[in-house]
Amino acid sequence: MAERERLLAGSASGNFQARTQVMSADDVARAVKRMAHEILERNHGPAGVMIIGMQTGGVELAGRLAAAVTEIEGSQIPVGTLDATMHRDDFGLRPVMPEAATEIPEDLTGKTIVLVDDVLFTGRTVRAALDAIHSYGRPQAIQLAVMVDRGHRELPIRPDYVGKNLPTRRDEMVDVHNDGVDLGEIAS
Image 1 (tube, rainbow, N blue to C red):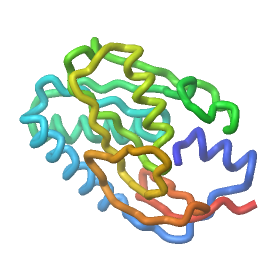
Image 2 (spheres, rainbow, N blue to C red; image 1 turned 90 degrees about the horizontal axis):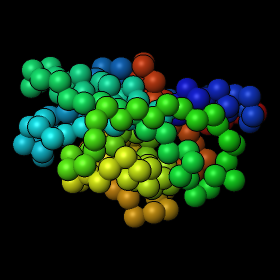
Image 3 (cartoon, rainbow, N blue to C red; image 1 turned 30 degrees about the vertical axis):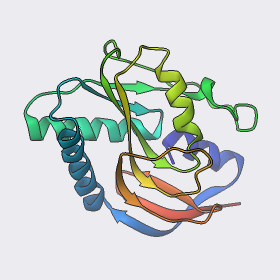
Image 4 (tube, rainbow, N blue to C red; image 1 turned 180 degrees about the vertical axis):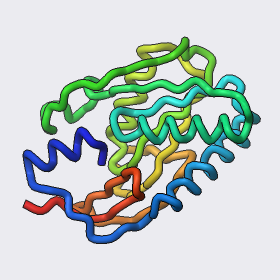
């Protein structure tokens, strides 16, 4: 759950209450490093790869992945941010959140884009991001990296890079933050 969603959940429907920590900060750091290695291996190095964090939960993770790639390869990789809010198919069903910044550092055409989010749930945010990304160019390929895949997909979307597969109930919440990953629920 990103900071923006965390704030809205607290004011609109209750507060997130963690029941258990499923990943520590060290676990998340190891997962980031592993995913960075997987990205480099699958794409035969960093050339032609751009990492784009989905607002808001994927932005910090995208930065951490890019830093890990730089540490491994010694060269920087372009990093951007994407807000897909206006491309969602459930726009009228969810609370309207203020739009966050979209910053695409260079033309996407012909690049391999690694879309990054903190939690993959129904797949609807990723679908919206796929629509949004094509507003900025025609990439050669789009890959998906998530810290937590919690299941419950409503669309045929599958991540290419996963920090942790975490089966959950539909009413549970997953919170990815600097100190790790918590599983809990919204308490009113």
